[in-house]
Image (cartoon, rainbow, N blue to C red; front, side, top):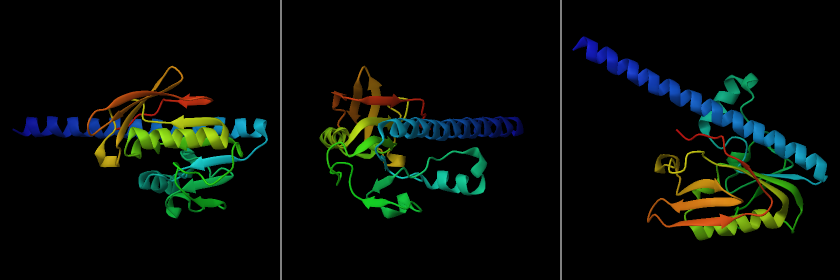
Length: 196
């Protein structure tokens, strides 16, 4: 019996370790993708819009506060937009708004950077509205999503499974299972993220 308990303990620790590695990879990918967004913004000569804030996850904010040298978060961009002001705290330029109705003029931004936001939208129609808005307000769109299609989870508040296809997103509603491919112009995909 003791051997079984030890074995189960080792299996549990292994699963936790794998989860921590995946989370670290996810946070590094967010940071690296943001560096691409910042680079493109400098080329475009227009502001950078960040949707969702640099501290979308309480875990990420906690880790960043105790181990800032890991460089796991991106900054706020020139403008941070979110429905919740806490997500963009302590950003200097915050706009309260919804990704489905961005309160800026056409092509105001050189780049819009959005990481782990779209999978929280409720329906494919909401996603289409959001993607249309992203393309409307920026010359380039950088989207970071969970890498493994089908790994979205209600635990994190996900409503959609997302996966990159050739020039767009494959989308599946978690409830109901409706699936559709949505083409995206000016898409710069980053898909190394892993959802645990």
